[in-house]
Structures are given as C-alpha cells and as structure tokens.
Length: 383
Ligand code: NAD
Image (cartoon, rainbow, N blue to C red):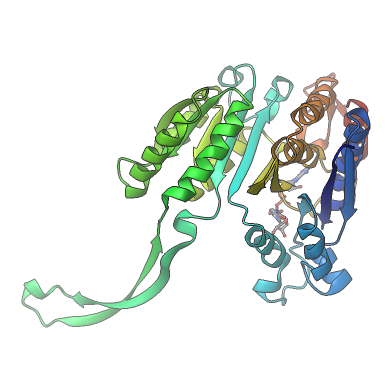
C-alpha cells in the first residue's frame, strides 16, 4: 500500500484561509491524478490561534505539526490587532520563530520564476529577461551574523580630545554594537548539500555567494563549498562575490540557476531576486530541516504576509500558496512528477490569460482579471 503523507495545514490570518483553501483543492487534485494519499489536518495559528486557544501557536497545533510529515503554512500577523500584546507573544514571533527553532529548519529555498507571459510585471527591461527568469535562492537560515555570539551593545569610554594633543583628557561615554559572524564546517557542508541536490533537480548549476576577499567566513565558505561540490560532479559550481552577485541579478538574471548564500547575504539577495517576479503573490518558499530516510521535514509558505488590505475580498493571488505545495511535494516527499504537474498547471492558467489583480495590467488585452477562487479552480482543473 502507498504511504499516507501527513500534512499540517495552518492557514493563519488575513488572506491565509482563502489561499490555503485553493492550495488544498490543488493538493486533492494531485492526490487523485497520481493515486497518492494525503492526510491533511487543519489547525489554527497566529491571531486565529490566539482567538481559538489563547496562544499564537496553540499546544494542539504544535503537537499536530510534530505528528506530521510537513507543515503547509499560510501567514500570520495583523498589524491592527491589539498593539498592547507583548512582542514575544505576537504571532510573527511566537508562531513563526518558534516553529523554525522547534524543527531545526536550517535551509530556506526561495524560487523566483517569471514566466514570459508576465514580462510586464518585472521591473527589468524585456531584453534582460531572456526566455523568462528561473532562479532558486538557497539561504542558510540558522547561522552567521544573525545568531553568532557575542551579540550585544555595550558602553565604553573614548578619550576626548585625543591624549596626543596635549590638552586635558576628558573620558566620554560611548556605545559600541557587536555582531559576530561565525560558521562551522558542518553548517556549511549541510547547506551546500541542499543546494547541490536542488540544482541536480534543475539546470545543474550552483553559484556560491561569499565575500572571500574580505571575510574569514568567506574563505572557509568557499573552501567547504568547493569540497562538497566535488561530491556532486554532475553539478557545475562557480563562486561569486556578494557585491557582484547583487549587480548581476539586475544585469543578467538568466545566468543563475541555484544561488547558494549564507544567512545575511541570502536574506538580502532573495528579496532582490524576488522583486524580479513582480508580485509577492507569485512567490513560494520552503524551509527544510533534517532528512529522515526518504523524507525531509519542511515548512512551506508563501513569501508574502497576510495582506490585510485585500483579505476576505477574493482578491489575493493564490499562486504563491499553491506553488508552496509543489515545493513540499518535491523537496519533502520526493514527488517530483506531482510537483511538476502543479507548476505546469500554474503555467497553463497564466498562459490562458488568467490574472489576479496583482499581476494584471489592462495593457494585456487578452488577459482576464479573476479572483482567488477562479484562479485556484483553474489551476486545480489543470492538474
Ligand atoms: P504583505 O506581504 O502582507 O503585503 C504587502 C503587499 O503585497 C500588500 O499590498 C498586499 O496586498 C500584497 N500581497 C501580499 N500577498 C499577496 C497575494 N498573495 N496576492 C496579492 N497581493 C499580495 O506585507 P505587510 O503588509 O508588510 O504585512 C502584513 C502582515 O503580515 C504583518 O502583520 C506582517 O507582520 C505579516 N507578515 C507575515 C509573514 C509570515 O507569516 N511569514 C510574512 C510577512 C509579513
């Protein structure tokens, strides 16, 4: 008998429930077409969790996640809800950061795809877009400058004016902030393996980003990635300094397949790359944890937030959430064919001219403006 994949579906707040509904519809269509079995259990998180059980990540929701093979997440947070709630209890922190920590999610995958039909949504001139942009940013998520110790702001004294001037020295209080960038070889090895494996499922090229000309971390990063690269001989490897990478993303984004980045560089470059897709509503994301046999525990969510300005109005683009399902199938469950079917159904809906408001322009005379529901149904029908 085939395996039943257990999915915790946490829709969250704002547009979360509407886009999750379409994603589940698509997952059910995939289940039918490929004779798979998914046990999808929905649970509250975010303000929905606070309303239901007094906590952004209710105990029962966390227990469900632990008993599942992966988490399909919507988004959490509503800026206008109760500003007096303590920072650490706010959904963005109490739910998202807690889940990241609890499940050891160390790899963040952000694909950026711009189909040719959506060239108008991209801020780059059409001639820079080639046959369409298709980049995967693989970002290390738990190390580097964001977590290294010591991390603090401290007071110290400076001499003013400097003693050499001969004047009376006054000691003046000042502050200094310290962040520490630290990476170990095991941390670099495991994220490098993720990038090379992902590249082998795509166009087999990894561009590793560093600042080896200035940072000790960059030198170690380059050495370790080169060594791991030798274990993946079918994937081509190149190294690029981060400043050049930022520029190349604007000049010739089509040269990239997989970009492998440490935490802070990945944070910045993944947002820069995301801008190329034209709308947050098109961008899925995956955060992966440990691999257990044939499966990798993962957390899959749209790159955008709860979009309170359009929530509940059938205006949200469900594609980011639907493509998050494709990432879950490919990277968590090893179901590449089913993942491809979702991506091609999205491609078909776009090619047929269906557009939610965020990717619509009246200049496209053959395009049809549709709502969340109609877009979701068209994609599900295309599976
Ligand atoms: P946002 O991403 O929610 O919205 C930014 C803009 O993008 C808005 O104009 C919105 O309408 C649009 N947008 C986003 N997703 C869209 C979609 N699927 N279809 C069409 N348009 C879409 O960012 P924000 O307004 O800064 O944040 C709103 C709330 O979401 C905040 O509480 C924030 O903390 C939270 N947030 C949560 C997550 C998460 O859960 N991972 C991520 C980012 C922001």
